[in-house]
Length: 209
Image (cartoon, rainbow, N blue to C red; front, side, top):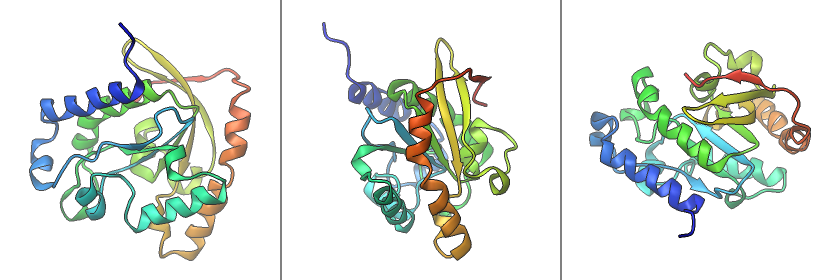
């Protein structure tokens, strides 16, 4: 019997979220689950914090104004949306686009871990402080943005060596000229980071929390 494809494994994770009724109160106020989108064979995974209004309507992450900005930045490094994989930590829209709560991030984190286990990217790009803090608790996005970090993510029965690149969230940069340029500059380093990550030196051991 052939082994399951990455698409099939990701679909099982999506179904598991629904069957497990993760964050039922959040789900009740949302239109639908926003699981992830893109190429599961990609070397790059982008992780945001939670869906917004447009994402809730379409079921796809990063399709609103912030998503258009993300698409523009991808184009500057020779990529399109279908070349990468995009998801969020929390997969239901919080009411009134409020920040995801710690307990909501904690509830969804195991499913994000499984997504990463299936995709096995070289580079994980976190968009905003909420996403970054899942990998590096206490990280200050204002001082650590654009600084690549080599990590080993420790799962239950598996390990995954990645490079983590914390960036500002595109939504925060939309109406802030200096932050927008900073994000574009940080984003431009992605091809170089991908190339350098092939060297695979020793990785720091880190468990998601």
